Length: 210
Ligand code: AMP
Image (cartoon, rainbow, N blue to C red; front, side, top):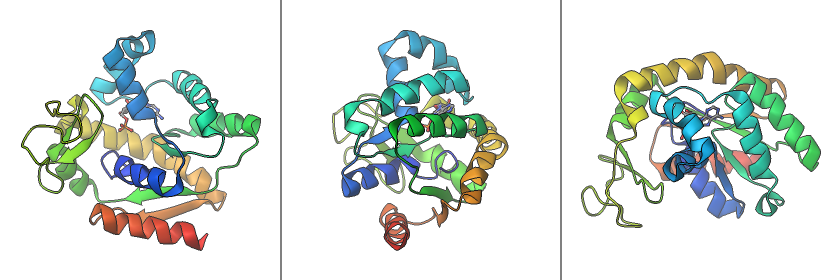
């Protein structure tokens, strides 16, 4: 969990490699549905472009389907879900059915101004969802994805006014969801400022201590 742009996706990819379990990013699933023009994609496109949260019932169905797949049996790293208090209940129900617990919840922290600065420089690949940053993680060849060769773009929801709205939603909707995990003793708050390697080391030492 963490504010938009705090580095959840970057860290989740590293955790996926380290733990050998799939990285389930609800943002990536939704963006690829929009690209594919599927019924789900058409339904959620305006929410994504405007930085709004997709309704909880749509998210509940999506996460139930995704975690029901075979590759999720041995565990998974969730990225971007749950983001609201009702989504915590949905996840509890889905995991109850699967007979697995939430083992640990990592909340990455940063100041809002740092987030706005990061998102302004973020560029993403529409072909393979790779994420770059103009200052801290530039592609080898300017404007081009080093993994698949597509032209990099700025996400419409990374525009500053939209980012400010997303941060407000985070405070109003997502922090109360994180509180539930704090009360359950599952929440680890980690400083998200630093290089991706530094932040990952903090996460790894937290996970090995628990
Ligand atoms: P992300 O890539 O995690 O920043 O997600 C991008 C966008 O997808 C968000 O701004 C929302 O519009 C939507 N989204 C992703 N996950 C969720 C969620 N758990 N609940 C509602 N909307 C979501």
